[in-house]
Image (cartoon, rainbow, N blue to C red; front, side, top):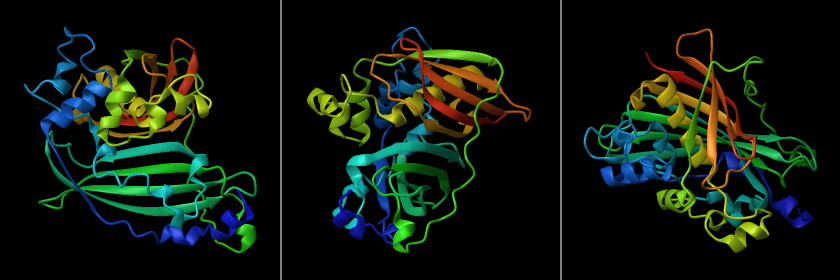
Length: 298
């Protein structure tokens, strides 16, 4: 980061950032498209997957909450002072307070809760929260927490700015063999489908942009991999009932290329319904989602 950028970065400005509420109306068609973007329906004979992409007895995948009332790539606004080119999505957590309706109108209320300095040359962390409410009743549907690694913005404490205390670190999976695993194939066109949900970063569509960023081809959105892992948990531990997945969180460890197979290893923890998991790309034997935790309602 240049000296000019360093002066402009202000952690308190991020904490005070004024987000307007986002109103988002979505339909059953959007719900089905979201599921299709995560690979549901790849096997036309899979009746269980049809629960998410066919209007008969349609269910919304709970992770669809992350694409509803999304405030957009606001960190690119020059007024933030963020070196946005160096941003990395580090972690994501989702808590469902009610079943996500298959269609409706919602309001998203966003805020920055933490800005944490890791030191000069080591970057900083920004934690943001989004609450999703029913637009008519005001009922809270979901709470999402996102950790963003700002690789170019560390060292602000040395300039007299306040750094928040970091929340507890996510816990690694148990040091034993998993209790079960589940595989799902992603579609070759999955990134092109997922970007229709609202994240139109060209990194996920334009080969030239992806190559310039150091990838061999466009990569899959991290939140799409997040959704695929949730599908595996729902299939393996919730009897294909999406309403039973009420909490999921993880760390993004490595990118996924559309068309790759994601294998999710799952550990059952001591408390009933509590799970740990991690996901790897089968073709490259690489962990792409780590430190995963989830809770399944009985």
